[in-house]
Image 1 (cartoon, rainbow, N blue to C red):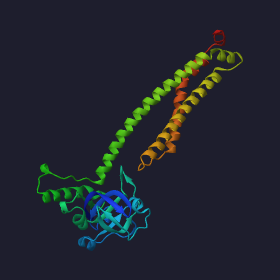
Image 2: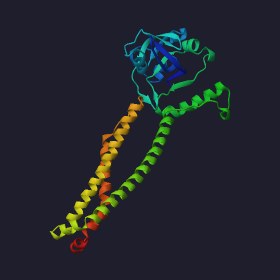
Image 3: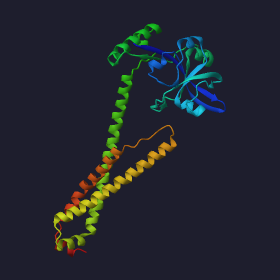
Image 4: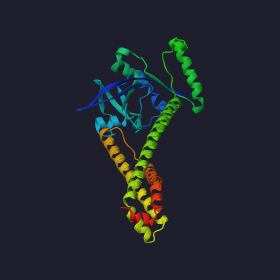
Length: 309
């Protein structure tokens, strides 16, 4: 193991002047920034001596800086966390969202100051312990070593284990499994939708053929070949599929804009390549669904078609 960073966490009511905000407050050691692979945009992280002295200093995330101060230039400014005053000595570089949690909305303070000033009731009880492994190949060995050390520290047997140990690999595996299930479900729904849409296009084209029998007979009498008639109805079926696809794209863009407007923290990204593939599939469904009606129109005898009412 390369580094260890025990932390304590709670929600905190923040204030800077007349501005208030709520954020996640983390009590950490000086190794937190390395173990969590964080980079500072401005300023510095607190030192081990500041941790031991319980110095009232804080390193804040980019979101917290913008919400409280309106900018990232906040070094030397003071803020209160649950009515306790801290001086900002650093701002973390923008990281982004992890699931539904904003990783940039955080205040990190020395863990001694945290336990003494923000949560004296629980003393120095640790919420989480972050451990940095040497490399990906040593994750399994590190997992076993950590489990064994915690069993000894907690004085419990594996059957009485009162803690959990997770790794980034297990989290990635869980996310991949969830993504695979969601992909299967969405694929099934999309398949059913395409089948229903194809049936709808076929019915519309069959009705169109039935209502235009005399037109078909007249065109054939004037020299139109079955191939020309078939091509005409296939093009119409493809246009129907394209119109359906464009309607779906418009609905999707509208929903994406609505979600982004309502859920401020959630950015919806449109994949234009996926959009183009969707339109191509819609056209393909229209063509496949139009094969039978177009073939039926192409096989009509001109005399029988002209005799129909």
